[in-house]
Amino acid sequence: MFDVRTTACYNGKTVQPGSAMPYYELTIAVSDMFREAVIRRLTDAGCLGVIEQDEAVIAYFLDTADMKLIENDLMIVRALLEKSGQPAAFAVHQRIIPDQDWNETWKEGFHAIDIGERFTILPPWEKKKTGRINLVIDPAMAFGTGHHETTRSCLVLMEKYVAKSGKERFLDVGTGTGILAIAASKLGFRTVTGVDTDILAVEAARENIMINQTPAVEIREGSLAELNEAYDFIAANIISGVLVLLAPALASLLKPGGIAVLSGILQGQEEEVITAMTQSGLKLIEQYPDNKWISLVVQN
Image (cartoon, rainbow, N blue to C red; front, side, top):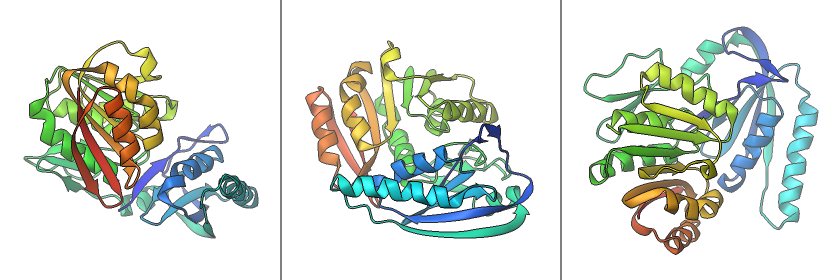
């Protein structure tokens, strides 16, 4: 398993894969619990892209980057986590990669994958599969290609429960590339909204909407507090701590009888999310495991 996130800028300048250049490859062994914090730090430091593997995060930087400063910054993150009593042992390995074509480098890692009974995720350069719901995601964008277990679980559960939900309004919380919102539109939801607080994610999602020709999808920059509609189906592929905080808001946005798929939850963290959801009036329907992750289905 791997997932890739790429940032759209470096030191304020747009960076597009496609030109030959040397770059640094930084491999960081980090637990899933602290992965998001490390990726955010790497993004803030100007990394060109991040590949998530089972046991590590691999980040790429221009050869002009101050790698000593970046490594020191990661060590500060580790020290802060250790000071708070959290186990956060890092292993960091650095190497410089000679000139090579970025487009070909990215393409080597991206191939079509089938998910569930109907979905196929594929990059723009691969041929669409007949008889499948094709989700075309450009890896040269921000926030994930859809290969991660949590995204896969969301798609499987959306496919499973779509028939048990009204198909008027769908909400994708933390939309990222917009993949779940695009999938919802192709499943037949009349109006689909994706929200994200990150402008890079919003831009990436809007671009993918155009690629997939799903104009019924609207992407908004902002938080749930700015929404006042009620939804038949909600997907939230974020992290457990945020899901706990958002539980009351999610419950208030879900129509009576509406269904929500919640993902991004590490095994062992599901009980706190279940408690928050049930205390907000939602009923647990299913727990769906995939490798280290648990996804939940709840109903209003």
